[in-house]
Image (cartoon, rainbow, N blue to C red; front, side, top):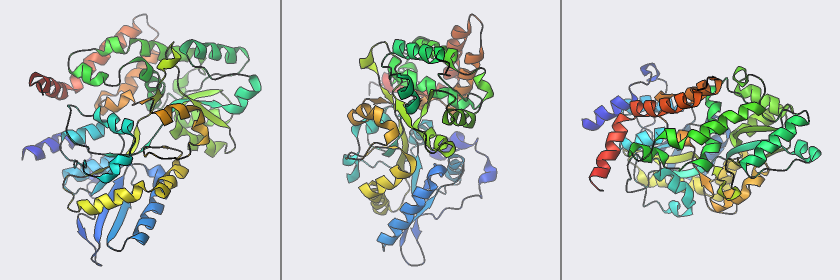
Length: 429
């Protein structure tokens, strides 16, 4: 009963009108006696890849039927199903606050005994440990694909003007000044879609604060006001090199402008590349790690688990679910997804790095990566809107107002988690 109340409290905000939108196959067998494994994944943009994988799996297996659902607004639908206790067997989600909440609600199976984990890059497994509100024994997700966020740049434009990739904050600002002086727009932003305000924020933060700052704050050993000051200052400094009124333009506007050579650079992740190339298929795009530090050796690639697979705790066919995970990890099947989405594989191996991310290869190959700060932010806190408000605030106390509000809102929306962390520490566990 306690667990049921916990889940209801966690997901009650979900619109119950969606409750009939997706009926699950449930655990069991189909009419032919095959074990049915249902996988619901949250990336509708990858539906073609998943349809190919589903067809391939079912052609190769006589005893298991894999059913993959790729609905729009998958997280809302999943939460509705969780309330109804109509869980799929496997969920494909990102490494963010939703994963943290599912862990806290004890909904995910410990897959420590899954043999495929030995093939996963250690840094992406460790990334998930930082998402645990308190340290847990076990492994609860198989990282599959990561993304890489930094600065997209126009290779042809850089070559034409003789611009070089910067490796420090000072070099980056000098580059922006040079580009501007040559009559080219250095940066373009789509801050009308407030989530895009997090792109430069996250890319800068990985160089300037600890990856576990959320746990430190929850422990009472740090404040965001102190940890985020330089990040906030440098994020706002980028506006000097952006188009006028970036909040008037959407994500699609920014992608289109960059595709049409209206700016030399675009601070965003690799996930924008398909959108950009839909406008300009022949665009010669590169991407470099955002150099937020004055020390080039401190540069870190902003990379998190964009897609990982979790088996639900109540899955009745664990071995069949493991077989699905093994199938997804086969090199040929990993490549199907890579070819479709230009992602970064979490599996060890000699997978080619996509052309657009070649300048990040040193970081990708050597695990010099850190997760997105916003993966720790509660959705209700609306940090993206807070950042947008701060960027628009020209008052003298804008910075202090923003930082003070961040700490205040963090406590407001994380009271239960803070109490859980501090209780854990008091026990000395």
